Length: 207
Image (cartoon, rainbow, N blue to C red; front, top):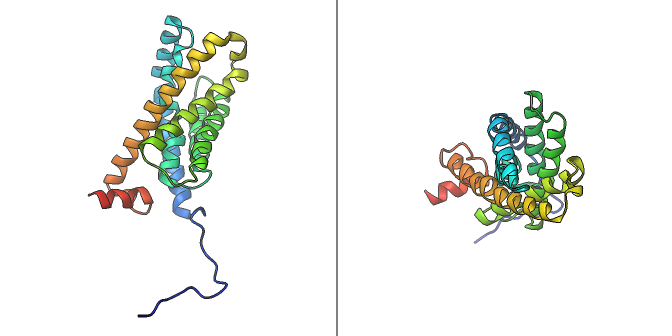
């Protein structure tokens, strides 16, 4: 029996290197998420206001859908920077299409993307199951909470508000971004649209 080995000194392709298909797919996902953000701006904004009026800080329960970009990007592309890329581009799309928060939407996208990215980095970009997805959604929520300490002046609102807001944000991020994002990626993979990605190959093995 013979074995074939790579020639000495032959370059190896890192699994973290972005391909053209990664860039194109991440861009398409970002635009789709940006359109979703635009739709959610009205519904989610109203839900946030009503919940926050009921109990200050409880508005965080409505934030999850705005965190989907980082989770979906990370689960599909599975390479460093994917969560940030998709969330930030999606935020830019939302801004260009008339988000009521203007340029602050882009800042939020960056903070949320970093939050999700850090979780995937801690997992060494090797775990992409439902638990990892929910953790990434929660990480995006912590990123949003941290930014709003300064961007929205929340730092002056006291520990009770901050605790409630952080708790509801994390729950919303874990469920409405993490769990929902994981289900969306599984559904997309089942159609064969992600056949050039690990998520798509996993779906084929399950079938």
